[in-house]
Length: 410
Image (cartoon, rainbow, N blue to C red; front, side):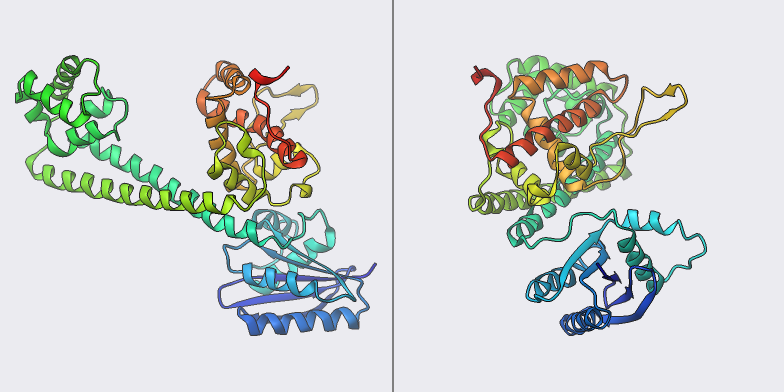
């Protein structure tokens, strides 16, 4: 079977294109604009060359470079389906793998034309990912779940920055939080409305009244909490007056930013839940995997038939570990490979953290891995629990059956 291999190096305004045959001969090299006219022109040149060189199969490859090649990939994929005389596949390649493949050619320069040639050559060698499939509902879901991922990462980063500012204002509170959360309503009220010096000078009765009001009388022992808070205030560093207002403003601004992003996440969650009602799935039958986590997983997996087994799915998610062996030696400690779909990995880890709170099997597995880990116990145990969850996700999506929790099994 003769192949026409089309390597495309995508960019914002134009695409560099390389045509190649099975022998590695360069057939044509040119560029097209990154717009609908350029896509139409490229399609016609591909079909003309396939006919000219009597190609049975057309293989088009491009890197997953942001969203710059999204329109072209889906345009070609949909139009190829309308052409009956050729078989055609579109591949979206991992940019890191393309870069590693290029390292085999140690004398190649770095430019768009050469990069397109390298992509075409990688198509020739094979070992390619699954070809692009048309699944608009998954793509639509991805826009929401990936935006949510982006916001959640920003919220986590901004909360870390906020906590650094808290240490400047009230070092003792940052070191030894007497509340259940530094981002709880009562703790934030203390940070926003009181200075450590004020806390020290207040009577226990005044501080208890403040805590009762802000905590809506939910504290079991407000007198003990007030006394402990005063102790932390006395031991805290004193902030220079010139720094007090800037630090307070910084805390106020960061809280506003965090609050705004959390509201936007809530909007996304609502829309995700609405979209999920039109998708038939059984992941939500697992207690702890709600519609949002299910959406994040399904949006990245797409058609489960793309994966031969749960090991292939785990590799796609980047939940696999390297092996270090030489002669008679094999290391007991291995590192997780820093590859795979980061969005799928994120939602699997988040789902695993939620499932372990409700499912006894996953709770026991997490506890076992936590006890075995020498360092980073929670993180390591959680990632391993996510790897265990991959098996369940694969089975549920493959069989379309509902999950039976441990307590209901015969």
